[in-house]
Amino acid sequence: MDKNSTPKSSKVDAEMNRLFESGSLPSKYEKILRGFYTQVRDALHRANQPCEAFDNTFMDYLQVITDLYIKPFEFQPYHTKVREPFDFYNFSLDFIRPLVDQQHSKTFGLEIATEIEEHLKRGENAIFIANHQIEPDPQAITILLEESHPFLSEKIIYVAGDRVITDPLAIPFSMGCDLLCIYSKRYIDQPPELKAEKQLHNKHTMEKMSRLLAEGGKSIYFAPSGGRDRKNEQGEVEIAPFDPQAIEMLYLMAKKSKRPAHFYPLTLSTYDLMPPPETIQVELGEMRTAKFTPIYLTLSPEFNMDQFAHEADKTLRRKKRSDAIWNIVNTEYQRLTGKSR
Image (cartoon, rainbow, N blue to C red; front, side):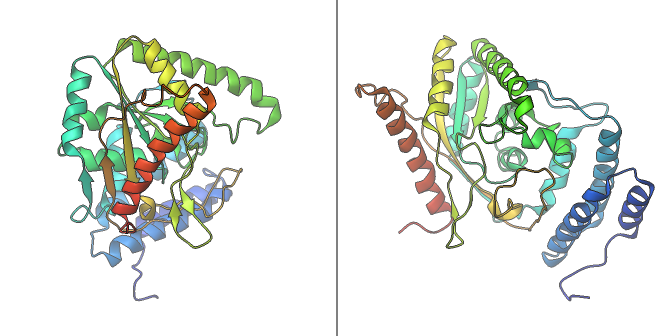
């Protein structure tokens, strides 16, 4: 046995044997689940972190995905976190929290988080324009904010792509979040016969988002890249480009709501916690890796969405706005990861 590895829990191993041998879970997930469990267990062992609590959480995870395999969960365009009879919110945090090196994790811009909470309590809206690095970014954000700003950490609504609401292994974590579910441009044509249905779903999601903004007091996390940040050919994680049209759509919806809306760049450095696959894959069932690591978040000052209003060319105006927000996020990411010069 590798000196860095630790014996797996006999109860977890036995439960996986039972589930796959009985056909309670499809065999195509066996390699993924066994590998994922081993990855997390070894990461905790190398960091001298206790494994027993995680084993219990993983047993819950196996039970949940088995139940969902028998009776799939259908996400509505607007999904509110499921807290009972099973508390998916706390479950997902219990799953991710042991992997976070909280002693060395940092959150910057806490004074801005306080400002945002004041906006929300006055019935105004706050929209985070952010990068996106890992599937459990919502849980990472909650963990980074829950101690200093518990009100904000529970209030955020995440604009979520279809991957996290259709992949059986991601669904339990998504069920613990407030989500506006949308099919991304990248996958809306796959399969072609479902394109019209997906477009109708997106229309309903946009209508619901408009109603939420009109109610006021909402905070929305939006990643206009349409996907996760990945490594370039040099092996460095790059902030994915932002889509100017996506930002414009959200901006116009916020203006239409007649409620004050405040836009904030948000930067995440969570990549090492649970990196995405090196390449984008269409099929569901990606391998998952994990690491015990610090994570970081920065809230930057409010962005003036009207600062390029003088630009007559609307395409150029939208691009300038998108590039300006991306530059803030990217510059902060370089600082968080120690790459700024």
